[in-house]
Length: 194
Image (tube, rainbow, N blue to C red; front, side, top):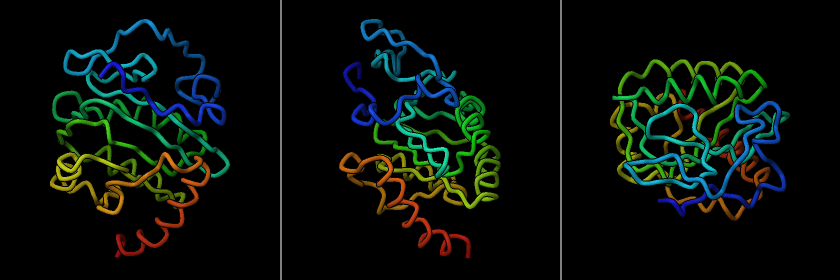
């Protein structure tokens, strides 16, 4: 796992360490110091620790005018033991929302497992983004991870669709990706809200 890096091809357009509105502003990376682990395996030092025992994030792109953030996650999302959604919302999502982000694309292809628990933080997050016509999308989850989100009925709050399971997001520039999904969601949400 130590060689799985967050997507870095958009760094010339956005760096969370250089964005004063980012919860990771000013973070310095030592590419030689491996400290964080998932399942006792070290992960690449460029993943950001937000306080979870098993889940790490990288904000790949944030556009405050459009209100969109694209984030990549790695590890195990464990609400059952560690209440990861609470920690994620408090330390990453809430600071971004305070600066106008209300559309979230979460790339989950490196999330190995999901263990659900209480849905209250998902419901709260959904209500907050819907006040501003926003949304929360899960992109490229592993099949069993998607099924675990669905079996917990979290598709009431998150956009989880099989069309989003193998999406070639790396082919897009970040602004084009967010525009593409903004249009896609306009067709998807009316069906979801019926």
